[in-house]
Image 1 (cartoon, rainbow, N blue to C red):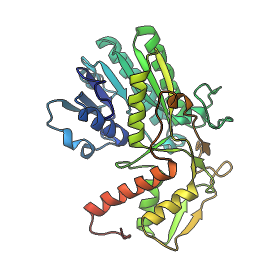
Image 2: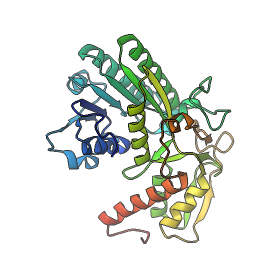
Image 3: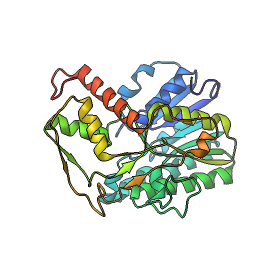
Image 4: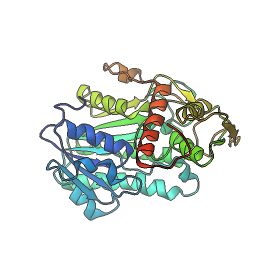
Length: 336
């Protein structure tokens, strides 16, 4: 299994560990005998995602905020490995309230690094960055050494700023850092993003689906289990001071195809798609990168490749979300 033997005997902190991606990482770490501490303010995560580990002697949960000094001191004490996933994940919110991404992403990362500097630097610091740091890349698939990096969203800028802080702290204070630039990671427990949004819209109106943009936006999607296995591979097989890796799939899917997959999984027929037309040439919103496909050749050179392609990951994600909703709800606008 992923992480087998890699984290034995080390105290691990996962920031944002009650969130969608973080909770899957926690599952993998705990299943392989790690000692895990999670800090999460539960603004987007939920205890339901990690409830199976509550009460386990190898697991500790701290409801706290990375902007709170006392919470940080408690969370970072004696930690040897840091997985920093905590962030505000809503890209769109940056166009109206940019301070949220600045505070929750940039300032929170700086304060985490400062807390570690005071308490003792970790052996390893892993950060989940984003494909949005590349902006509208002219080279597709986009490799890690592409530049100059010109984010077009506040979210992307906040992730790039955090990358710079982590790289400088690693070089100055002597710890190993891994920066992961993620494609769209999808799977069960996700509570935002295009698949979840489409399902919610179709539950309200199973005859018409509003689609932001012109429908031609095309991006790469990776199932969360593949992300965890990729991360395990990078940790095991690289040893540089600061490593940067793209993590994604080898193909991409347009928004219209995602809508078709979701409606198929909901067993809905004769759904009318209504495209809003979007902004800036058909984008879903200001700051939306219209075309994104990461080069994963560097990651593949370590012997890793995704088990599912983008369309397979989208279909499996839709199915898992619908299965969970059907299990806990006797009322629904669709039939499984």
